[in-house]
Image 1 (cartoon, one colour):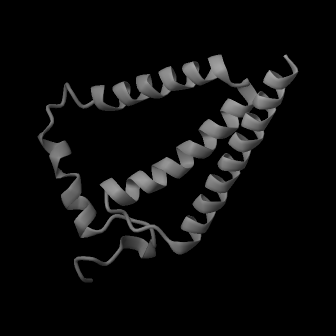
Image 2: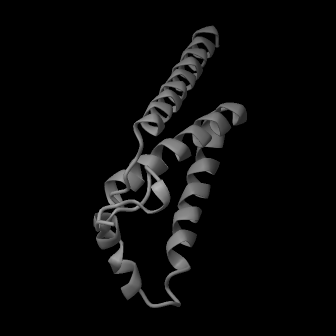
Length: 117
């Protein structure tokens, strides 16, 4: 088994390069580690609340769910150097296209409302 071999036959796992990218986490004190996801969760909640002020709730939920999936895969590839299977990229592209279509449909609805008012 070579150093870049992916365990258990997974085609989207961590490589040796991705392990190098996350070594800094081991140097973070144990009492600070919970703050990292907590701050990111607080930011996500603030953005979700802000978007609910300006956009319909159903549209927000569809867009946020799609963006969470899309951005998590992209971030895993960029920051953690995870190996992402081509089939997964096809799925992420389809979800991203769906999010764009939802946004476009909602922005068209909003401009139509302004013209009537």
